[in-house]
Image (cartoon, rainbow, N blue to C red; front, side, top):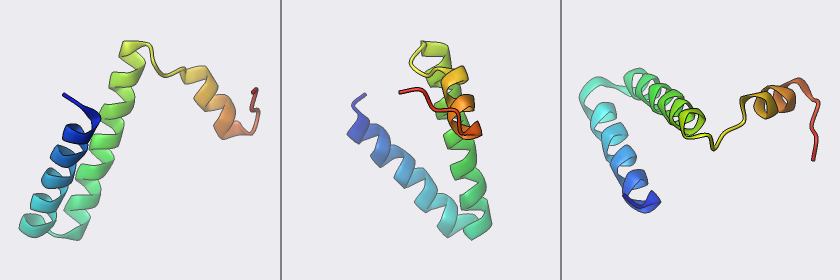
Length: 62
């Protein structure tokens, strides 16, 4: 599945959620999508958790 297709799917899910359940439900679904994305990237080995935590703490190493 291409990134464009995934983006369209996520957008469609968020739109349906917003229409069916309201704004705050849509925000909750978006949060869960973001967490799921991050977990998937970590499991694939494409996201360095230590690098992210260092960036959040202000200790960037580039």
